Amino acid sequence: MERVIIFIDGSNFYHGLKETIGATNVNLKKLGEILCGKNRKLIRIYYYNAPLDQKYDTERYKAQQRWFEKVRNTPDTTLILVRMQCRINEKTGDKEYVVKGDDIHIGVDMVKFAYNDAYDIAILVSGDGDFYPAVMTVKDKGKRVENAYFKVNHSFLLRQTCDRSIRMDDFIEKCLDKKSFRKFS
Image (cartoon, rainbow, N blue to C red; front, side, top):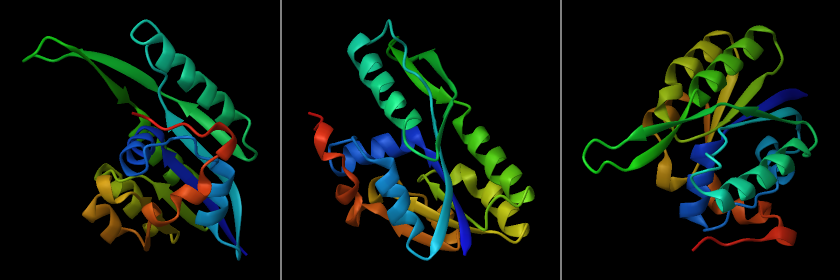
C-alpha cells in the first residue's frame, strides 16, 4: 500500500478557502481521507502557518488560536508554526503582515522525508509555484508528488510539475466541520 504524507501551506489554504467557499472550518481528517483515497495509507498531515499578532487584532488572534488547537488535536496531524513579519507599506504607511518561513519549512520537510523514505507520495496543498525546486528534488528521489489547489490561487507551473493535480473546489464543502460552521463576511 502506498504511503502518503500531506503538506498543507496553511496561509495559502486559508485564503483559498475564504475566497472559494467563504468558510474556513475544515475537518483536516476528512480532507486527508479524501486526498489520500481508499487504497493508500495516510501517514501524517503537516500543517504550516504563522500566529497572528495578538495586539493587531485580538479577536482574529483568538480565533486562529482555537483553530491551531483543533489542528493539534487532529489525529496524525502536526502543526508547524513559523513567524509573522510586520512590514510597513512604503506607499500607504500601513502595517502589513506577511507569513515568513513556511515555504522553506515545507520544502525542506518534503525533501527530508523523501530521503528518509517516509512516504511514497507527497500531497502538497498549495497554489504557490515557489515549491517547484522542492517538487523536482522529491521526484528526482523517485517519489511522486500531487498538488491539491483551489482555482482562485493556483500555479500553472506547480500543477504541470506534479504527477497529479487535484482541484479542491469540487469537494471541499464535504470537509467542513458542520458543528462549528462559520462563514466570513
